Image: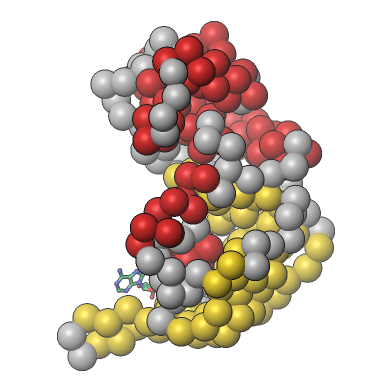
Length: 224
Ligand code: ADP
Ligand code: MG
């Protein structure tokens, strides 16, 4: 479903060109759980942003479910973000003044639906990540693991089938990180396609595919 061919991404600052991706060929099928590893600066985040329609390649082909996206309009890309693809970040990116339930509801505010329907979807998402009882707490009253569960609930609440996570356990201790990987594994068992970036081999071992990057290329890709 995710197909990248000859993807190049260069950043230009005046006369300085930084090649972040130098030719990526990659297919990720529905229901896969892939981990991306590689040294800092190897292009992992850039790759995830292109897959997630947050950034466009300088050249190359990107097809998602057969649809060409390399030159899609911002409007189309924005529709895909949220509907088909959602992100989870290292530092959770929650609104501090909103409760867990309000944070999870945010992506639904763009859609027309009744308050009751919205509350039901939020509760179902919070239940799926095991924190339905914490719906009224604000982020300051949640542990790191509970914050990341809230962020994962926000990522799944619109029904996106693809979850992309940039070092989702990077701000957590190893035990909590393992719990969060358990949440991703459960979502993967229920059919979500998941791509995570990590520096931690233990975290990567929870996936079923390991992709290693170096200098803007994939140097290794195997089922694990
Ligand atoms: P990683 O996530 O593996 O650390 P990145 O994808 O963030 O790598 O970065 C890949 C390369 O692109 C690095 O050399 C980085 O400095 C460069 N880069 C990333 N974002 C920008 C940007 N906005 N402007 C210029 N260079 C960038
Ligand atoms: Mg990065």
